[in-house]
Length: 114
Image (cartoon, rainbow, N blue to C red; front, side):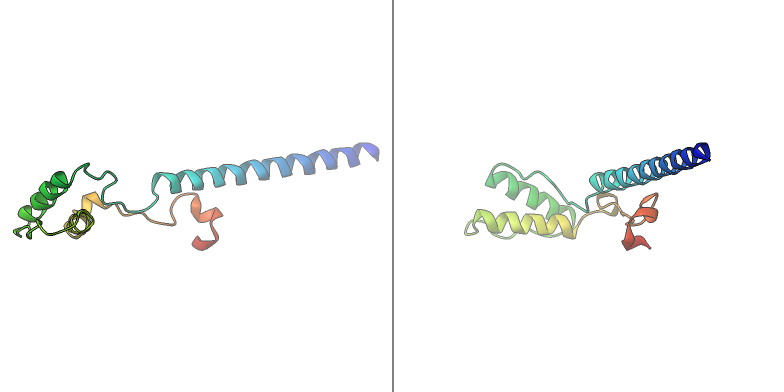
């Protein structure tokens, strides 16, 4: 009788270890997917100078048939904002990847996907 009780306890511990391992692996895969696709970003680096921002903003607008407004009286923050809005407005679909929130193993472990 003592042997079957010990075997049952070992079996229960083995099942618990396997379940924790599988859940931990699923959580790690889910967290890794979020780290690789944190969201949509139009651009991560900002040009260092005001002139570079004006040049890039002008190039973006010219590509789409628009003219750069007069920037002589604009602050650097206004130029940066206008340039970033143009980038977002004219972003190509390939520049903005589609991220499906519930794909792969995340479906199993994320309550938002249930």
